[in-house]
Length: 293
Length: 150
Image (cartoon, rainbow over all chains, first blue to last red):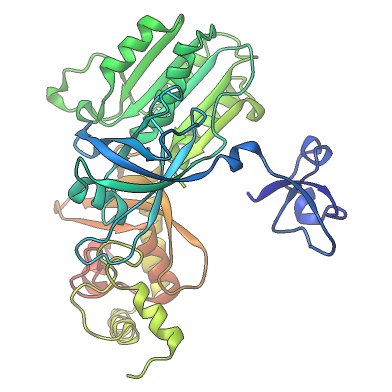
């Protein structure tokens, strides 16, 4: 939604705002910018994060296959030489013309590297059938090439709290979770963290070594890969079924009164997981998500 | 046919690289209106309308979404849905965005499969547009109706 903080001059709340803004948001002068009529000067609070958005030139230093349809792309900053971002944020990558595609487009990808690494960043890009940008990345982009992007953007990220953290992702939704986990590791966050990652079959799993390394280095972290359709020769002994199955089994074991949920994936997966989390005591105010929409 | 600037802009949306990599026309050189008219005549001959086709595709899309990317058996069909990041505008330019969702629908009886997108459902329902011949996501109305058992 087009929420923004208007400190002065916005007038009274309109009906469409009253139904979409909480009491707390109204007290904090949050408004829907699509509803506010500009009839005099307005005083608008611009978040610091917005002021950090820049236009970047970078060099592709690595393109490698994570799975049959997801690539890892590493970009080294050229100008500016550094990027500051919060774990969970994304950038917008600009394509170059190729084949029949004459126009440039920009597409959003979550950053999959630690925020302490300011000289480069990683992206995880899944091939979209007939996709302009992902086809360019998967079939045309080469190491050594210079690219343009803008960012960082987005407000998905770690929220204050004391309780356990439950992460859920699927496919390239892994990206912001890697950045968050790196933050937990570096800042030695002492909260219990459990990460449910959904995939179809073993060929769709990736970053397993990295997750095992996080399990050793983060005080109380467990990674739970789950396959919904393991292939016969996968010899899979881990969790099976839709991601909601192990999530529900796990959450039902004890009270989750202070737990927070962080989700990244398709809106369908997010909706299904929110229902499970709600039913198991994690309220909507403690669930944060980054949908593929 | 002479096009107004507005029509030229809309026509451009259907070309490769404007909204999708391959566009919506394939190798079809006919004007969009002619493609819609001819497919509409085919539907009329079959005694069907675009709403019935779109409803059936939407039913399978919704069934597939329940699988969170895993295959879902629905009657004599199996449907698998891939939900990708981002959304696309309709090439007809009437506003609104459509999520990048692809479905693969297979008949368990014949083994035949089709692919369609969330955008296909919108284009058929709202514009009677099944895409041009040779387009990767062209759904020939006669073949589609037979496949769906309509």
